[in-house]
Length: 383
Image (cartoon, rainbow, N blue to C red; front, side):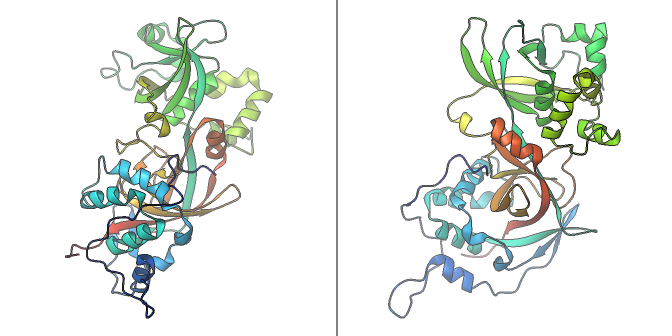
């Protein structure tokens, strides 16, 4: 299982008290835990149902959230602090407390969640209540700054005329039309060994590159999303399924098909006309501990960031996730920080698994049922 990069320590200094919430005493004079006190107080009148553009939020008791006591909340706090760099208006007033609680115990963090937030079960406006969880990741590939034997597949910056010609050339046209190739000449950022690696980076929208510079030195850089050619995305997995070429359209299944059918690689690539262009970003030691920036504009945290449909769940919203399947069981606090062209609907999420081969293996196979609860600030009151 992929977990957050910056895990909490085994012991924690005492956190600042939650304003206005005092833990009462047991008969023997010892204190109730803040978590125990607030859990026993979870009996008030529930707020009304809330309707979003694509979802219905149904208020529930905290006891409905599966696995709440077992989650390592400190890992999620790293992602929440990132969201506080660009908070949504509803949660912005909580950010000072979120930062102060970053080194609190999980018990204190759970108590604070119950004091400040109301859980709502996310449901579609119609149809079955369960949704779908898939995964995505940041690839890590070798590349060369200059074209050389074994490294002949380019990653491109945005072409100069991209804004004046929409949609731009398709993937097939880029490979075959002289005018398309001329427009991209000199726009190469790096050269990779395998066109499938380039396709994976374009589908994920980002990637880490182990770059060999022209002087032979090697460094790690990030290739960040810069734009697209404006063509519609077509899934190569769906293309294979529609032609009865495979039964397993996961990335491992697609790679197996390619090994068996190398002469059809170009045909598969051209089935997706969409091309993503990149911009290079330096990767500092701090940046390397997090993923690329998602649609919220903050860096993603492995195992704690999800992509959602923003018409169902706003960016920057803390979400309780429950997904159980043959690959992994996930009952945990995550943050809605990204979106994707295939992430549509009320109970739909893409789980950011991290980077590299292990994360890619999980992301490539993850497809299992999903339930979501948004954690929304309680109505304003004097704490």
